[in-house]
Image (cartoon, rainbow, N blue to C red; front, side, top):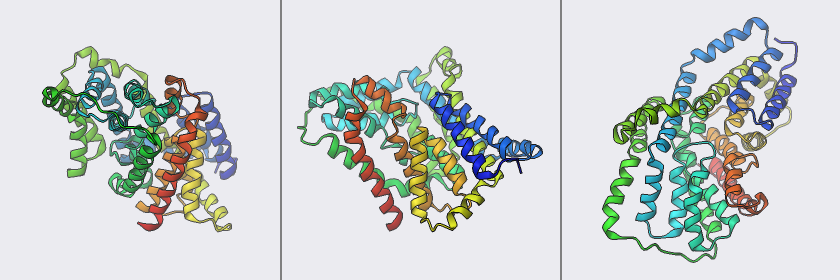
Length: 401
């Protein structure tokens, strides 16, 4: 072992990671450097290369990295081809109820997991919210909240895929545990977001209904293709992601420059590096023995499993402002204590996700509040009770299902 005991080494490494996140170092770089730092503190020099080699050659890591790259490429291509604009416009012209439009539009845009992507739906939400006379804080809330209701049950969610990879659980088994929580999130979002707000209807033309439905189906086809092959044939997410890219290219027929621009942009590679960094940090943490030491420390204190699964990941995700970082560190620390059945994995994911959703460093929250010229304190008035009810639902699901 290295020259520092596992728990102190891990604590110092976590502070190092927190400092980099605070300094706005890219998450991928931060996770990879933290893994390297922890390995130098806690591992023998001779064993470090083998841990890195194991991570690079591991089939789960390879699948995760390829899936992340494919999803990010698809997201960027949706923007380059203008499919995002077509999708939102078609939906708003089909649906007449402003409340429904505001609820669904951010969720649909959420199918494209772009960092800070809530900003993409903000202008469209603003138009409909003005018809409902919503205040700025509530406009910000509905845009943030409904964008993030889709991810716990969306099989192409990068954090969901990462959770499955780290815990050894299938994505579908996690999704099934989270359906009741998502129902509660939608219900509480609708109740809090539109409390005492009168409904407003569009003046939609019936003549354009068929063309709008056709456009909606056309731009949705790549995402539907991915979901269909995952659910129907249990195809690896990495293969499904690139299938979605191929379907989009066949439908949109973008120019060569439109295809090459995303490949020259840094966000794709930074998010992909974050997926690899999370797996590397997990492997280094396990090799350091910190999970065994943490298990012994916990064993003498009779801490309930539900407390560990809910408080630790939520706190880490909140402090880091990163669900990937929260998941990676939580799984590494709890690996020697908890057997990750779908029951435990579902609560772990939801606690991490909700902790991140309420973090003041959450990019979507910050950008949306800035767009609507609203203070974070005004948004938290709606966000805190929504998070509390969703968290309670996740715990109830853990005990009852």
